[in-house]
Length: 233
Image (tube, rainbow, N blue to C red; front, side, top):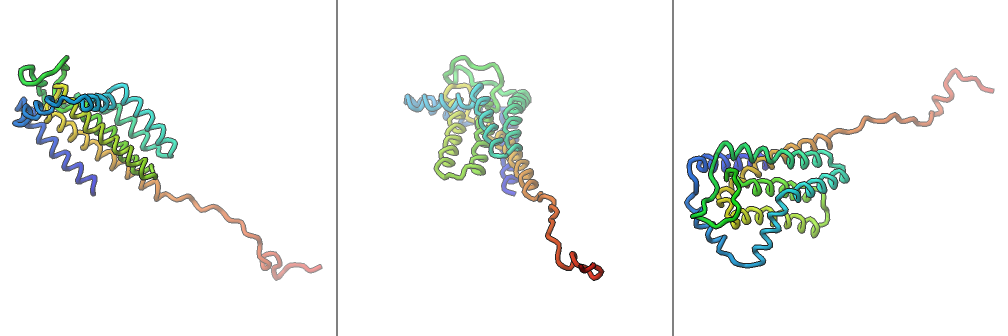
């Protein structure tokens, strides 16, 4: 029920933003918020966003995906490993389809600063969606499989950092509007909620399956050994 509600909210949010992005190149606060983010002149902030963006970009995504899938296999979660690989491989298709359908242009040079603006459409942000999907899955699997509270908290904290940082970096670099990033988060959340629901369904079915009872061979009772018609010597 929780993930169904989460998915419904994500679906409604994405549809609303997608419709608005299809008819408006910018939202009311996009330019103002982009300027505020780009005005931050702190080396640590810049470096942290670069790390987060790299973690949500190829080839780091491939390496992280392979490592998480291997760890899940070692934990006996084959369904989870398959989900991570399939989600990572299929994610670019969902981003491409949404961009081509909505056709929102990238931020213009007279509105924000940027270098080497990508030629693809702007909404939704692929980096934001990729970060939310992959690191959202890691957050979820860490809650399931990591018992040590400090290690689990550290892993989940790193996931939140990458998700938030990757989105901020796209705006900081001038490659996306803040609304593009939020749209990417909504799309990632929509897919993530469905994936988690599928994983929980398979996990529940696996737990309810019990092995067939094995035959037990108990020693014969005296009655069975010495029936009424047995011969005495």
